[in-house]
Amino acid sequence: MIRLVKFSLTIVLLISSFLSAQKLSSFEVNGNFYFNDSEYLKWSELRINQPIYDGILDSVKSKIAKNVLLQGHFFFNFINSELIISDDSLKFKIILEINEGKPVFVRNIYLDGIDSIKELSIVKQFEYLKGQVFNKIEIEFGIEQLITKFENSGYPFARIMISSVNISHDSSGYENYADIYLKIISGTENKIDRVEIRGNTSTKDFVIIRELRLEARESYVQNKIEEFPNRLNRLRFFEPVSIPQFYINSKNEGVLLVEITEKNTNNFDGIIGYIPPGKNESSGYVTGLVNISLRNLFGTGRAASIKWNKYNRNSQELDLKYLEPWFLSYPLNINLGLYQRVQDTTYVQRKFEGSLEYLATEDISASLIIATETVVPTVRAIPIFTVFNSSYITTGANLKIDTRDDPYSPTEGLLFINSYSFSRKTINGPSEYITTNLKTSVDLQRFSSSFYFFYELFSRQVVAIGVNARELRGSTFENSDLYRLGGTNTLRGYREEQFLGSRIFWSNLEYRALLTRRSYGFLFFDTGYYFRSEEPDRNIPKSENFLYGFGLGLNLETALGVLRVSYALGKGDTFSDGKIHFGVLNEF
Image 1 (spheres, rainbow, N blue to C red):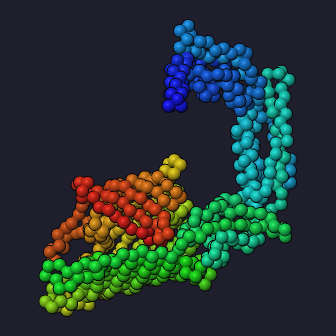
Image 2 (image 1 turned 45 degrees about the vertical axis):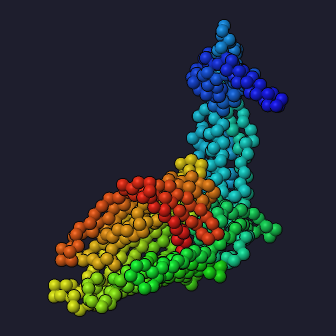
Image 3 (image 1 turned 90 degrees about the vertical axis):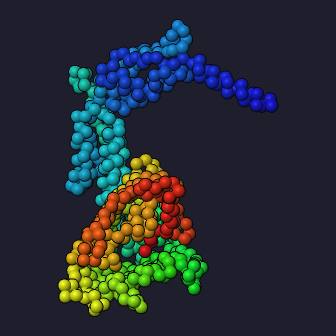
C-alpha cells in the first residue's frame, strides 16, 4: 500500500511539474544573414510551446553550432545568448546574437594515389565541388560515391582518406578558401577465383553457382554481388539469402562466400472427405484435394508436382507438371505438363503441354510452347448435345520479366508475363450434330497479359498491385475453351471459377504489413470483368458484368508451404454472405 501511495505521488508531481513548466513563446536570432530564423529553430530541435528543461540554452547552442559548421561556416560564433522568463513565469523566450562569419569555399581538391587514366576519369566527379561552399555532407557523399565506383570496378578493398584540409584567406581577407588533400588507396584489382557455399545440405553446389551466372575469374563488381540474393531467392529453395561476402585466402585467391539456409522444398497438402448419399442416391462419393510439390529433386533443381481436386460427384481435375532446369548445362528450361478435367457429366478435357524456356538474363526469359488437347463429350443413354468431340494443336510464345526481390513476399520489383498462342481446333463429332453449315476447323487465338508491381511505402509496409487480362478470339467457342474467373487466385469474394468468358479482366490491390520476412497480414480490394458474346444459333445469350470484392487475410510461411487465407465480400454481399478463401501458394 505504501509503495502504491509513493508511486501515485510521483506521478502527480511529474504531471504537475509538466503543467507548470514554462513554455517556449518565441525564438529570435539576431545577426544572421545566410540562414533564416526558421532554419536555426529547426537546428535547435525546439518547437514553440515546448516546456523548458535544464541546460536548454547550452543544448541549443551546441546543436546550432554543429549544423552551421556542416554548412561551411567555420568562423561562426555566438556573441550573446539569453533565456528570458515572462513576468507571470508561464512562458520563456530565447534570443541569440550570432556572427555567422564568411563561408569557406572549396578551392582545390588534391588527389594522391592516382596512377592511371582510368582512375583519373573516375574522380572527375569532384570537379563540381570546386567553387562551392565547403559542405561536409556533400564531400563525404562524393567520397562514398568514389568508393562505390572502385568497388564496381574490381577494387572492393579501396580506401579514401582525408589527409588534411587547409583553410586560408585571400589577399583582401574577405574570402575563405579550403584546399582538400585526399589519399586514395585502391589496392590491386580482385577477381572471383572461387565460390564457396555454406549451409547447403541437399542442394548441389553447381545448382547455386549456375544461378549466379559468374564467368571464370570474373572481376569483383559490388552492385552485381548485391543482386545475387534476389537470384537465389527466386529458386525458392532457401530462407532469405544475405549478400555474399568476399575475402582473399592464403593462396591469394578471391573467394566469394555464399551462406544459405535451406527450407523444406517438398510439400504435401491434402484433405479427403466422404459425402454420404442424399435423397434418391444409392451411394456417396469421395471428395477432396491433394497437392504434392517436389521442387528440388535430389538437390538438382528439378521439380515435379501433382495436383488432384475432386469438386463434386462428377467433376474432378488432375494436373501433373515437371521441370528440367538448365538442359545440358545451357540456360534452357524444359517444362512438361499433363492436365485433365472431368466437368460434371458434360465432357472430359485432356491436355499435354511442353515448353522450352530461354533464360536470357537473370530477370528476363522467353518461352516457346506447343500443346495438344482433346475434348471428349460424355456418352449419355439419351443423346443430348453438350460439347463437340474436338482436338487442338496449339503453338505459342511467352515473355517474362521478373525483378522481384523475393517470390514469396516481394517488397520491391515487378513481374510481367505476356503470352500469345494460336490453336487449330478440329471438330470430330458427334456426327449427328455436324451440319453442313458447321465449320469443322476453327482457329482460336489467345492473348494473355499479367503485371504485378511491389513497393515498400514504409518499413514493413508494402503495396502490391496486380493487373491481369485474358482474351480469346475465334468464330465460335465452347465452355471448355473459355476462361474462368472467380476465387482465390483471381477475384476474391466469389466462388472458384464462378464465371465464364471469352474476355476477362481482374485487378488486385493489397496493402501488406509484414509480420516476418515472408509472412504478412493484408487488406485487399479486387475488381473483375467478364464478357461472353451472344450465340443465337446455340441459344446462348450475351453475358457481361463488372464485379468487385474486398476483405482481409493472412499469408503464413509454414513447413507445409506458404498458406493464404482470406475473408472476402463480393458486390452486394452482407457480412454473413462473406466467403473464406484458403489455399497454398503455387510453388512450382
